[in-house]
Image 1 (cartoon, rainbow, N blue to C red):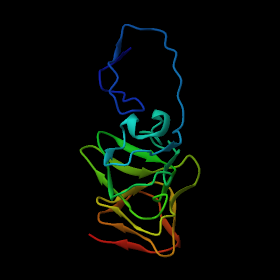
Image 2 (cartoon, rainbow, N blue to C red):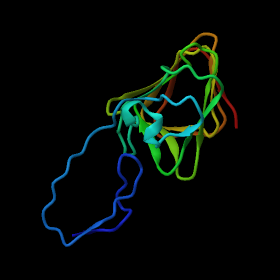
Image 3 (cartoon, rainbow, N blue to C red):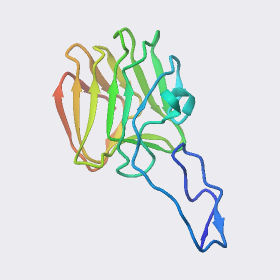
Image 4 (tube, helix red, strand yellow):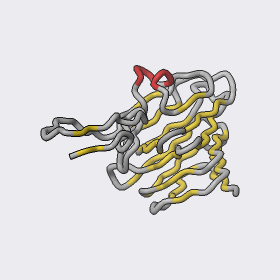
Amino acid sequence: LKIDAGAIINYSAVPFAGISNTTTWSFTTRAGQDGAWTLNNNGNWFDTNNWANGLIAGGTVANAGGTADFSTTDINNHRTITITGAPAVIGSLILGDSNSSHDYRFSNGTGGSLVFDSPGDTAYLTDTSMRNQLFNHGFVVNDQLEIDVATTGGLDVRGAISGTGGITLKGGRLQLRS
């Protein structure tokens, strides 16, 4: 058995060096993990320095799940989160500046996208901030996505929403732009 270099990408979007001439393997797989964004600056989703305890939320494979929490840090300006190199697959996204003064803006870099794909039947996007959150490049919905937005805030999606799932707006405002 041979696995070429780069055929497998680990949880942090780092390509695996490859394997050849090995007959016995032992490895562990896991679902996506929960993570809390702690950086008060612009940053890349897959940089472990941007997450509490270095735990990047979600995963890079289908049905990864996990919760990405962007509501625990008091950001002092608008912050852009770029997803580069692999899809960020999550089951739940919580948005919100801890004092509701600023917002997050999500952008897809080369090879990156935000994918809602939960191990269960429903993925969740919750905005607690009462600010407008911005998705510059849309996202992928592979499960039913339930969106709940604080009453004075909103989600502004400036790109395609693709995938096989549907969207339910539980509360707030969702603005779609091309």
